[in-house]
Length: 507
Ligand SMILES: Cc1cc2nc3c(=O)[nH]c(=O)nc-3n(C[C@H](O)[C@H](O)[C@H](O)COP(=O)(O)OP(=O)(O)OC[C@H]3O[C@@H](n4cnc5c(N)ncnc54)[C@H](O)[C@@H]3O)c2cc1C
Image 1 (spheres, rainbow, N blue to C red):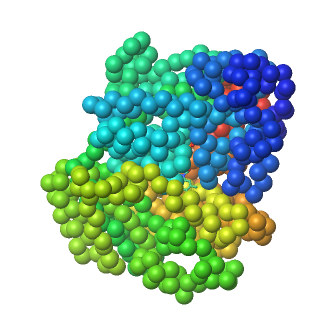
Image 2: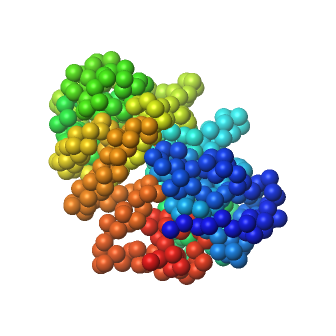
Image 3: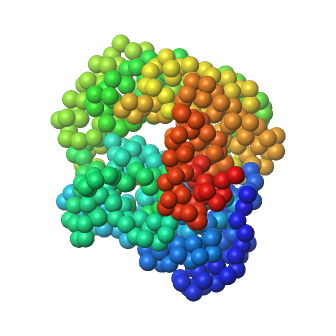
């Protein structure tokens, strides 16, 4: 299925927002492709539009309904690993909101209201330039936008790292062009739009995350007041089997709220892949042998697994938390621990654990050389060490079977584990690319055999993953479809997103 280029619609779009913001050339379309995809053509849009305001978005949506043109909203379109800027439906028109860059900070209450085009670097620079003592939570690769990342339920590494849970109040253009504000924003001139989540009656913020029910034009987000101190340890664990007890040691502290960020235990390749390339270690194409793994670990002085744990807040409290952490790890066979301490007044640490945007993790796409990329598969597990060990062993075996290098982490939220499996590849290696899709499907099937669902996925696999949520013959998908059909009968907003297709496109 694909959408066809509609010249009349594009003429109407140009009349609404100006010809210079309507992009239909081959180079433009390629700019909005999924650059990590083996076949960039598969999700190529038929063009892109870049409006400057919510009013222009509304006008575009009205035109899209008139001509039945599907749109794919992006904030900055840096969703690498999940499809980049590209739409699920080939030929859809990318609605690039990156020109909308307003920032309104409530310094006293620690909130920000951003338009979709505001990147993590934009907001960081804004806070620094205006000496506002509020911290961001940023994703590992921070090229993207504050709004787009939160709407896709992205994650960061401070105690504000569950980004969707920090959303407070949205402004949304609905698929028919209506404009709505959620929560307290529903009251004209409310001073508590970004302070109190629920508003009155049903709450709708979550409905616009990972969905295609509207186009968000403003997003309220809570920011962390700059702490007096950040302290913690970088722990290294020697053996693959250490994963189980490490999770069972950290999880109780996470659940009771002593640890407020989501520590992520990752294997040795996480470091090696951003700082070196594979050919620096071996020319052997097969699975990396123990000699290579040992050499990597010695060079970076890391364990088989590594984890960073950090506490944020008043120095006294942070120091007391460190003592509890010390006691918890007291009798455990750790390989090493490196203390970390940042105090207000110190220069920024320059890392996501202190809320500073970075781009260096993008270098992992170069692990194999050639035109690199990666794809992530991230099922959610109950937070138990034995289950994590089983998960690790099964997925590790799949990496071996498909000849891919094991790159994974287990991120600990308060009551769950997210097992992020990265498949790093070289798009110019047809043999390798031939295995990626089969391996991804094997990972989905493996997780489904234990009824573990994925938290976020690539545009190629949205139907597959949505299909695994199968209670009562996929009742949730039916509910999503009913909402979609009610709000968007012409299917103009992001058809196919999260497996939700409008009636006009369902077979
Ligand atoms: C090396 C590497 C490391 C990464 N590390 C992380 C990480 O630690 N954490 C993490 O979360 N991600 C990570 N990512 C993934 C990705 O880069 C980020 O999530 C990035 O912030 C997403 O891009 P964006 O913010 O521009 O969102 P976009 O690409 O603009 O949008 C993301 C999704 O939300 C939808 N959307 C966007 N804006 C709107 C809107 N206004 N209205 C309705 N729907 C909208 C889009 O359709 C899209 O599906 C990583 C990627 C790489 C390559």
